[in-house]
Image (cartoon, rainbow, N blue to C red):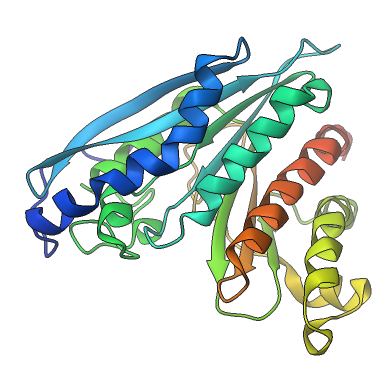
Length: 280
């Protein structure tokens, strides 16, 4: 790993601001913590802690261990709130885990690692950047001394996920689905197909002027983006990276439902995607 040992941060966000809003983190994590307390399938923990603005922050991790499948366990990772002002992804993870707890069948053969708050100091201050004023997406795999980057890189390096998913927002008026991990047209079609049911759900609720056909969505919104979470040659094998982005101006509940359904859609399709990858 090229990231440095986590450093203490000073930065432009004051200790007073962070102290005022640390309850936001507790409130956001509460549904997942309660779920884990009463579940035999969910493990709650922390990947590490760091100090920012005289406050101690943790990056939480929740693991859903699905029923044993017929083959090797598939490890997927879901990252949210990389931008501190986008908590909807964390809420979508809670909704997704609640669905799996009620009906674990779709998670058969999976271990799903969820990181609902990757930028806790940014969330506490309600800012896109972390307490040091840094955009975390720009720091991954670049030898950064930002502790959040260090811990996320370490998780990916240790667990060697087959797939990595991020949940975020976009200023566009339509949801975006970006992926990296393969140039093969069969793979692109499989990944696009996995996102389409959730996309249709969002578009069905959108105002008529924002609605587009599935064909247009597929052509315009599915692209071969370079993944920021896995943009390194240090991960072997290279996982697929899938980035879901929902319009920020959409109602919060619409964002949560869309992201949770997008995760469910990928879970349903991912085993097929991996099988395709092994045969090309």
